[in-house]
Amino acid sequence: MSKMSPSTPERLSGYTDAVFAVIITIMVLELKPPASAELSALLSLWPVALSYVVSYAFVAIIWINHHYLMTYITSPSLRVIWLNFGHLFFVSLVPFTTAWMAQTEFAPAPVLVYAALFVVTDGMYNLFEREILRSSGEFSPVEYRATRRRSLFAFLLFVVAAVLAVFSNWAGFGFICVALALHLAPDATGWRRRARETRRQRRATPGM
Image 1: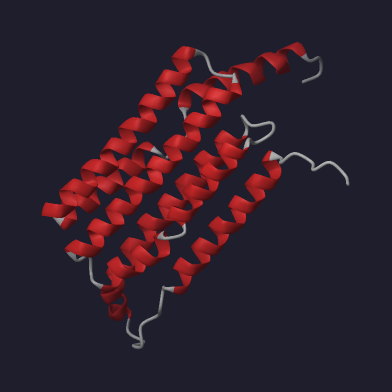
Image 2: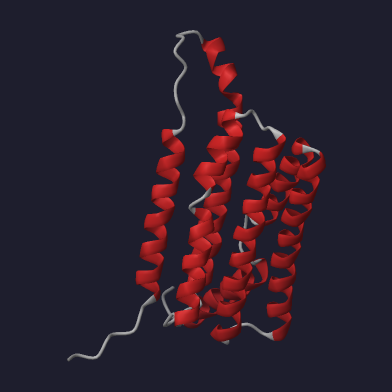
């Protein structure tokens, strides 16, 4: 019997990319055109359009941050793989909560469930991120703490959004958008460090 080959970050990323593609496809299929040929008929689709845009941004941000984190993995551990599967499980529920919220025009209960899903999804991402950063060995203590503070602050905003959704659906939804804004770019400290390393390598390599 041949020895089982270790998992690779490319295989983990490939599977995750496929799941994200299916999720986006499902959300797109929820965009039903109006029966009327009048442009004004599009106005009635505002709940679907708004919920789709926010959910699409959420999935895109997750993919960007996941792609960034995977650059620090050489051989994913079993723990990392299971954390990734757990994270994807909650992400796969985004189309369901998005459709429910859109069909009910942002009613309180669907918005609360939507916000709660963001909490558990971001919570799983935090566990996934912490495991990768701790095992990579590429972050200084200062960079590690800065990255974790940023992620935990965004997670706290999602928690606040879920709490607010209990009392006001629109306040909760608004806080979701604020929390998403913090995730628009991956950890700036790490990217700046890598950019500096790239510039040094280019200066040290003749002809570049």
